[in-house]
Length: 284
Image (cartoon, rainbow, N blue to C red):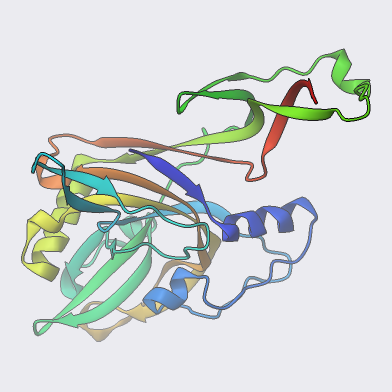
């Protein structure tokens, strides 16, 4: 079952944007700290994080034996307090002397250089995501038998001139199964070339392409920043990076990449975190 969890860190960024307050970098909330790149570098007072990147992991699932002895795959659900994935994997793993081109680097972040089995490797844990189609929409939703159906919420004149409910002694307003929400749908496309790069990374790091699984996807906010680091031949290079990288939402899903024969297309829906319940009438 696919589920999306909005994190408290995303809600914090939204609140800062809403009230035009300075964004405060809170310790133990960033992927910079987790992965060890530009940790503790805070945005300037006039800078605000925005959603521009995505990360992936392969521990968002577990294998379970059913009552009939047949195994199936179940989700490891995330919490709104989770600031990282259960098992983050890189988008790209390259020998440092065969690094991405300068133009290719612009699509990635979370660049880490590490030694592995005597080889110096460069890993990229973040990838840019296109948010131009993530247009916020107001919806009215109802949940019936565990399934949610949605339709556009269109305000009318009555919303500008609401009338108070008439409540007699002993009566209370009862919430219905309907609720309002603001949602933005973000398309996440993983190309066949990117799939092969992730598989190759699992071959290099773990000698096992079977670990090339995407079962958790994190949407990441942050602020672009230039960084410098080691390049081919020990030379120092400049490249695009991200500071204050925080996961604002996590999608549980499941894809075994060696079995994928084309691109993968996922959607993440993020929006209001506060319930906006509607009521249907009075009860005693």
